[in-house]
Length: 153
Image (cartoon, rainbow, N blue to C red):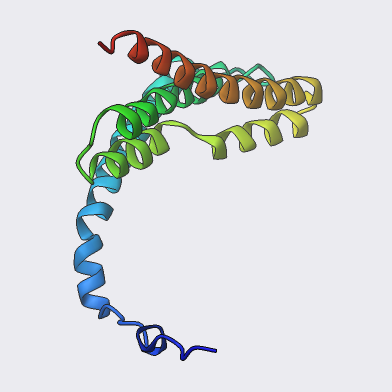
């Protein structure tokens, strides 16, 4: 039997709260800036393409599908191709695309459709969005990998 490693017995070093907050401030700032721009773009799409009462919410549907496709491309590029700056992923992935896609509005749209007497449209929207969003992220990532692989020497 061997003696335990003395390094593993020491108490973990904790970062003082002010230091931790200061280290995270740039990340919080870029997420907020990205989120504001993404949410503004999403809002513009909803104004441009409003859903009528009981109608299929096409603007939210396509916002989520396009946002998922873009994140598929983005994640392949920043994890497999390009060594991105540490703030790129929080700004664009979490901020811009997190603000642009809107799965909370998706849930509210479904509830409104069902409560408004349009359960079939609500269920179709529920299934179509989930299927299209997952397909979009998968296809975009796979296509990006294939295109980038073809460009390698």
